[in-house]
Length: 478
Image (cartoon, rainbow, N blue to C red; front, side, top):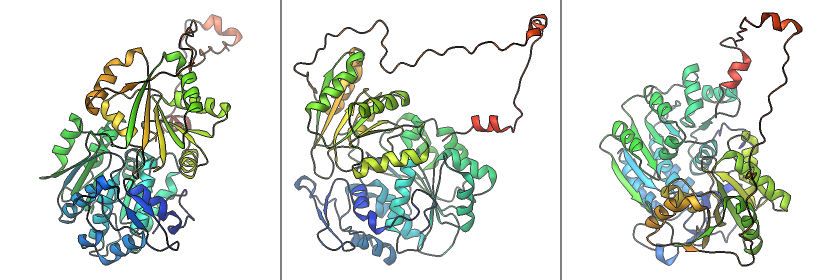
């Protein structure tokens, strides 16, 4: 299995088994009581012991795919896997509506591996498109573990890293490509990827690709694909644009809906009303008084995530921020550090947090309230996993009333309002709220030559050649 990613080179697959079990089966407790490479046991909470969970050996997967499942210690499927896998194996187009933490990655990875094993053909036969690099790596990692015995190759394609190694991996041949839209279009434009014989297309977390403005890119990519393909679309929500896209690309689809627009029963919710300028002070006091394990904090902007992460570190917390301005290596370090406990707190934006799958998150804190009720459900879905209880705290300012009401409608009742005893809510805001504000940009001093005054009536036009390094650098995106 070739991962096609520097971040994963040299990492033992077996060393990641426990992590992948938690990643693919977050709602099921896993105990590995035997040697490192022996299968473990799944312990389902009583509320989950329903007939929608079925044993993997009932799917009749290809023997080598089944061997990978067994080697990874998987025995029982989650509800979305139980519903989606048979349909995908039948060749049906599927639209899956599922929140984070339902095990949807394996719901499409396993039937794709099964299909590709029916014959040998070393070209790109399956394409998975994801909104972020982290999610692409997560999917690729799952393919590596579940497809360990198949001999199939999977590569990742995304921006923020060098183009040429990806082109080299594609030239060596791979049956599966996991890609982000922007860099995939770059490879299509350069002719370094051939999608003419594609058999299966997966659009994962389509609603967030829409949020990130990728929908035009997706439609451009579709023009390069054969219409004779199976298409799978997974989304936590179904805005009109995604519904229209699904209508255009899916043929007689079957809809699979699991835990849609509902919060886990294991999560408790609380609102902390506070003026905007006191949010950081309240957050620090809340963390000081609360017994936490791993804490995931959401902010609205990249700038605020960075500044809040820095403030937490200065206060003495083991914290990191995850936002789009970081290099891929630093983003991966932040993710890995949060997973292995190096960082107790991770501050992230909604977009950057796509792909975060850490089972033991004890608390989710919404420093900024999300923009939709669906986004709230998605955020707080990072806690209360693996039959553990979790807490979701939201700091709310005066102008958040409408969104609070929308969230309460989804949750089916009012959310408890809390205050901290002894915290001074009466501190006046500074004349200009300086919390996380940027310093005013100072204009650069004039560098006009001494004789510029006599030429004041002429205009000096400067331009960058079309293919100049400066222009190309400015055009890069992730």
